Image 1 (cartoon, rainbow, N blue to C red):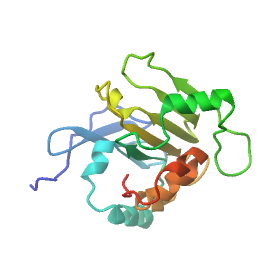
Image 2: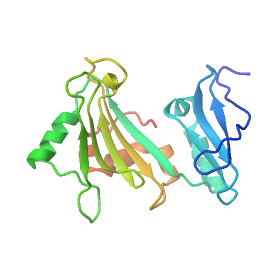
Image 3: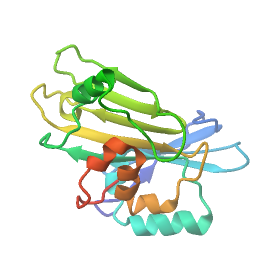
Image 4: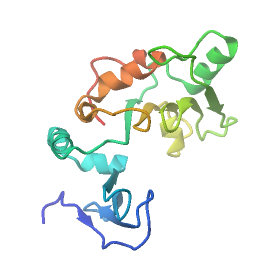
Length: 201
């Protein structure tokens, strides 16, 4: 096989996401980068790919075309911007303080009250803080100190991530090839994501 070949395990007999049976998708290094499940749920098939799995995809246009052609439904898609140098206004503790002081209201587009926010403090352990808005199952903003989460207590790397869920609406396949507009439009604080960054899922 080629260097980028993916393989799958045999079906394990264990359920996943409400399906009766599942198998793991394995990358060339032997890492589990996704899962496929079947059995039940109106005879549908479920495919889940991790962030590492997304890095294995060489042609997102082809994926988008395939999703559209077979009428697949995207039920969750996470889109992120990595501020490696901490140059933008995305520090979780600062956002939390601004919300607490009433200087910032986190809003999503459209009518309705602002989403709830919460803050997970690392209490100066160097493990990284996280700021959340919204909720799982609908749309959730998660801004966290990614470098510290990965073990570097001095890191300035902050990740701005929006998790889109298809429970209450359709996630368009266009998000696979044009994620940046979806990220920037998800919440008012995401508008600070530069508009000229490389589009990457």
